[in-house]
Length: 187
Image (cartoon, rainbow, N blue to C red; front, side, top):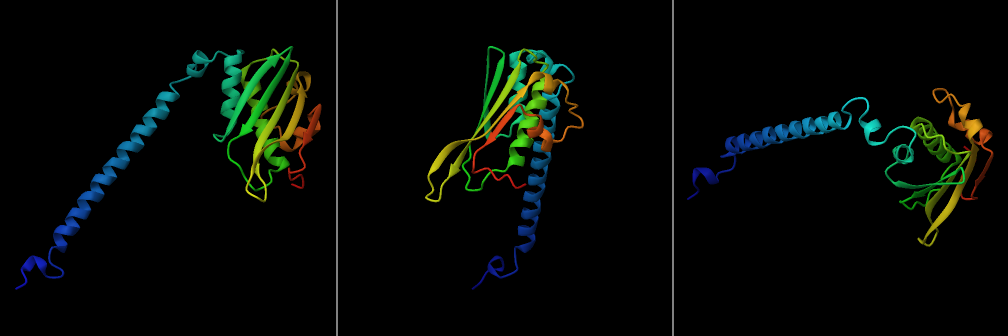
């Protein structure tokens, strides 16, 4: 004989009540996590000067901080200063079959140069930005290629109004630049 609880449709009310309870618990958990995340954001931006206190303007530490902030999370930068030449080597971490575009490097390098400006660091005469990107060939082998090099002199950079500067003008103000043949320059 079949008991009442074994019949189809019986127990649905308690199952729905259980699902509703789980949904409510999940909703509370999500709200808690969102609130925690916004608290962390507020704590990381504790007010003017928190970055300034940790990385004072005009220092190499602030310069390195601003350069790394300008890059996406899939890139790393090595910053060196020697005889007035500031050299920033950018290395991508994710290999791609897609060819990078000239616009990609103009946008990225513009963000880096603006970050250098915002850092207040001025102890250089030239900046060389060198970009390496891992590229996959048709056989799936990864190669790290120097795909872009741009050189800028400080007097030129000092003239830039960063609020209105367009990344497409970057190559026209560079003292020198080269792109590897894999870079799509048609855009």
